[in-house]
Length: 108
Image (cartoon, rainbow, N blue to C red; front, side):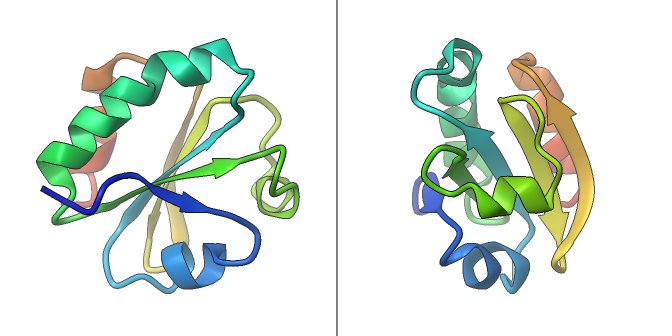
């Protein structure tokens, strides 16, 4: 079991995600977004399973506008998989937990 889903923002994104020793899956979301709320439990379950090996984080696009802009986020939820500070893959929209799990397994 990991440390829980980490909240990241414009101030700590570089240190927590890009410079991390482990791969990271970042959920770009907003509290008013229905599909974002729908995939939240799946991300939490994956964190409980794979949290020792990968960082699970979320970035509120309303509170941190610079980071989503840097990664050309046009719709939420958008989940981006990072390894060694680089984008490995990304998915847009509420997708099944199995799809997210296959994303995670790419970097394990």
